Amino acid sequence: MTPEQVAAGSKPAVLELGELFTRCPGTLRRARTMGIPGWAFYVTGRAGALGDIRAETVAAALGFLAPEAVADGWDTAVRVVRPLEVATAHLTECCRWGAQHLDDLPGTPRLTALLERVVAAADATGMPLFAAWRAMPLPAHAEGARAAVALLLLREHFTGAYLLAVRAAGMTPLEAVLAGPEGEAGAAACGWSPPYPPVGPLVRRRLWAEAVTDRLAAAGFRALRPAEGRELIELLTDVRARLRAEADG
Image (cartoon, rainbow, N blue to C red; front, side, top):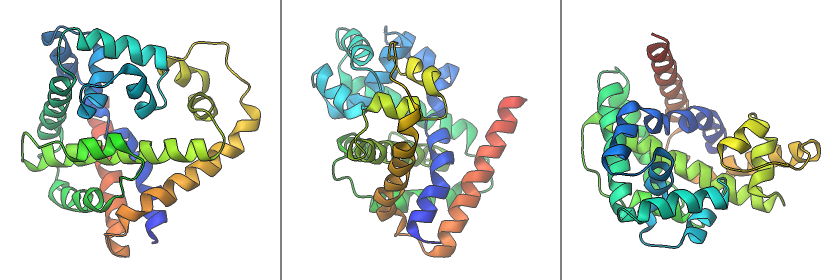
């Protein structure tokens, strides 16, 4: 497999697994203990790695969330706690979730090793959020925690690459969300308010942006041999299936 093919094959599972911890009840409890709402914890947890910056800069870095919704979450949080403290708590919850859900899975040590090689080799140019997260120190070093953090980092890398590709395609972030699989429901979840622009002409541009995303992300996957790329996709697919089965009870 080529690096681009491995990037494309890995992307769906990474995007799903890399944010599962944010919906965990334990993560939401951490937000309450810090005295901020869940949305404020999510926005500031992701962008807090950038430090003390303005909400406008946060919105530019996150890209796909509505600027007004970003400002609401960010300003609510920073009135109570420093952004980097929220990001550290966000990372701690990621590690806790990983230790709880990934430690005992048979493929976790190998998955961790492959993911960390990809993350270390990834090009952070034009992706400040990914660069900031990659520089964050790990609060725990168990295999499950490391795998969860690597998934979080790789998810931010894919998201950053997609934001660059969307802009290169001549689309706004809102248009990209609307043209995606969740459509208007996805736009609402990201804080965008209707009325929304028509979607029809945007689909072809979004598909082009997806292909460019894989090309931009491919640099990290060049750290893997072709057989290792296939192995990574298989491991990610297995972990996703196991966690889905666990969630279904």
